[in-house]
Amino acid sequence: MIARDLTQLGEELVVASTRLSRLATRNASTLPHAAMRVLGRLDELGQARISELAKADRCSQPTMSNLVQRLEEQGSVRRSTDPADSRASLIALTDKGLAELRDARRQAGTALAAHLGQLPASDLTTLEAAAAIIHKLLTLEPLEDTPR
Image (cartoon, rainbow, N blue to C red):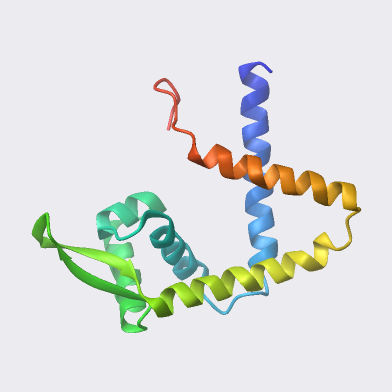
């Protein structure tokens, strides 16, 4: 496959995954989308500074600070002092936040199951393989000359 074909495939994957995510969460979760993104990032990254969360979510640090403050008030995340810099805080999921995230993901999976159930078995087998490949893709390190 030439680079242009890989770029086109990448674009198609981004569009399809975004639409799939919207389909899955449209009527499934009572958890706001922004909160689900932050809780998901913390699940992925582990504890992190607000600046790291803002960078990962591509939002401003004040926006992330406000969102984290709301999640902290709800008991979904906790703040602790960063041992590497006592002026900074680390944000981590609480058990409640992890349970909320898992419930939202379960609801999204249930919403998709209704659509998946309409596909032939061969398509489901292909999707299982594709999901495994996507997980593998997410673990790869970017090449040095790859634009970010």
